[in-house]
Image (cartoon, rainbow, N blue to C red; front, side):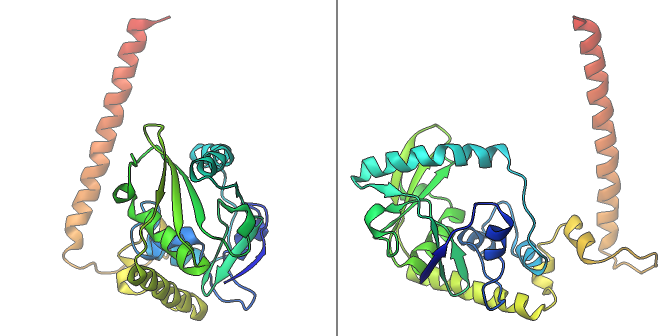
Length: 260
């Protein structure tokens, strides 16, 4: 593991540092671990792969992202108070192998070689009381942080019920090795710009495929099972149209009833 200066979060330099290393090889941020293992609710392994094949783009900050960024400094202080340690957010990133990323908090006296990692989560989705409540997506991230940096991970969670808990993540060496191996496998595919496997294509959505393959005006023969999905597509469009009309009629009635 080594450290280097951290660029401003979300900046083009920050994005590029999580995209390719100095040797031009594909690297992953710690939060990519969940997508690599197929447990991310936001991104599939195939979608992550496609991202790594194209230049990174700046993502507009959403309210959940902004809320987390606003609360994080306060929660770092509270986490430190509960653990009896002065915590700071380091101004360096920690990298090793195919991994590179920043950390939310580490003890102030061990920034270069942390005694432990503090990972802050602000969630409107989960209720967290103990380690068994930690979702798989967080566990995957925490395992790669722990493996690369070489120390335990504590989660500081401000959860759905607005409770704040500090929980040490149990570490599974086999899981960490499996995630690391998957990063090496997918990273190698990116380096070689290999085509997506049939397994990965199953994870893609229509918009993803449209980005991969330019549209062409040609005729092809679909397999028999496609007929079912054509019927479902037609039914879905009809149902959507009916729902939109029902919504409009209901709004019109209520508006006429309420007026002012």
